[in-house]
Length: 261
Image 1 (cartoon, rainbow, N blue to C red):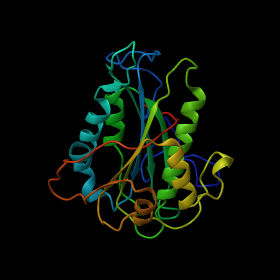
Image 2 (image 1 turned 90 degrees about the vertical axis):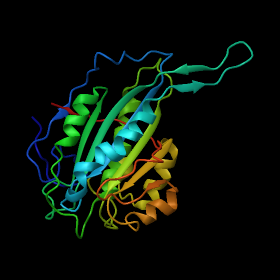
Image 3 (image 1 turned 60 degrees about the horizontal axis):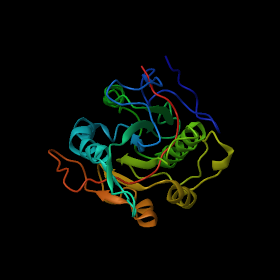
């Protein structure tokens, strides 16, 4: 059972903002997904999700209406380039799910950022996602930058622990947000590499690692406009009532931390 950790520099919290101890992913593979080998392509995806009271009205419909269509595309076979001796082939990807839940800075949220490492067990990931408790903050000091830096740190650790024989993974980052970001350099990072990172630093680093970025906008089209402008990420309309998932496509890069049940 994970415990909440206070918001201090280079510390990670293991509890979802405003919740009791949340499940975490154990490092294991589901029976349907084989272990990685040189001829399989790994698709590594981090979901960066706002877990505040401002997200609560939209949260129930987010997964089915927006995130499942994205995941279906990420699971689709990848066409590998051929050459004179070898024809193009379809490769079924191995999908790895990571999760970052961020809130506001204290005291609005008890926990500012919660990181959970990758799992290939979709049922476990889905269960943990559905149990995010959106009940605090989302008004003044929203820590979206902390969430994005936590995703970068997950990517870093994933690369560090990858098998030497593994092919290069494809990284995706999916930001699900409802509040305006608080414009302050990060202070909850674990790695010194990200000390004092602001928006421009985050965008520059994301460009290095991520294949494509999805932004699911749960409230306002002005929500994360600086990120949208600087990264030119794929942008989805506000979430309300019954949402259309048309046009949902993949986007960015990720790395490591763990979810456990």
